[in-house]
Length: 309
Image 1 (cartoon, rainbow, N blue to C red):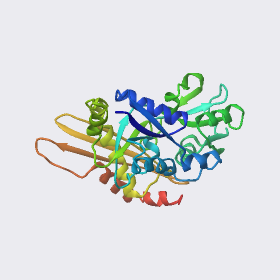
Image 2 (image 1 turned 90 degrees about the vertical axis):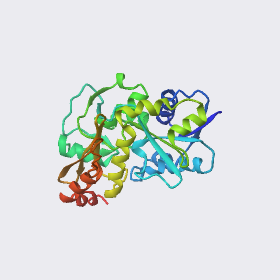
Image 3 (image 1 turned 180 degrees about the vertical axis):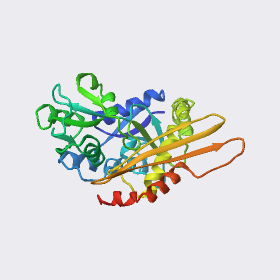
Image 4 (image 1 turned 45 degrees about the vertical axis):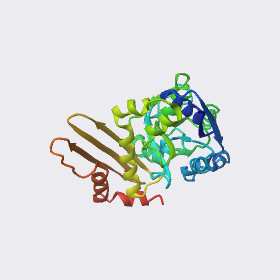
């Protein structure tokens, strides 16, 4: 059976589809290319719009049965999946940001730095003391072209996208050690909500859900779900100035931790939460996202989020 996979038509989006079918050993598939409202706005040079505009038109392909599966960058998906659609998260590439330079430069706070992300803009302000940040729009190729022609001295991009397009080796870049957005470097697979991901793969491709089984080892799906629960609880969107990272481990007990930061115009806070499920005593403490949410509220972190609304 040919699997119909809905995706944006950009080079990066199509590379993500190819990565997915390779991970899950799917050979019989057709890509349904969708030009989304987000693509149209981005092509016009707009930057201040909800990243859900890159997703909703593709989800309509699922609702109208034009596609069996949709593939997104998890970072661009809203925290809560729409009613009737299920979502599964698969790890793949680095979650890090990189600073890319036009020449053989090293960072100087007065450099003209390009980014379309409020989070990155404020991280550059707080951690790099950057004083010359300018808006940067377009796909990866367009952003790199603007850098190389001299519109910017340096720009910040996600390492994952550059890895997927095989561009890293030709660039002068440094990896930044700060925390990035929830889901950066991760794929989001969306499908009919009446199915499970493992069941869907078995039904459509006669394989045994190899990519889901392999991915269980690092807990990607449960980690990103916990992060998204936190984003939903605090009312954060794709453009909010919040960074999150999480980790999970399996053994005699299951452990999950969340760490993150919220950035205001003149200050930022750090927050954390942990969860341990003791399989022997069956104890169930508060979830990691709930602990992190309480930590955010205790530090008045919601006020920092609201500074940008």
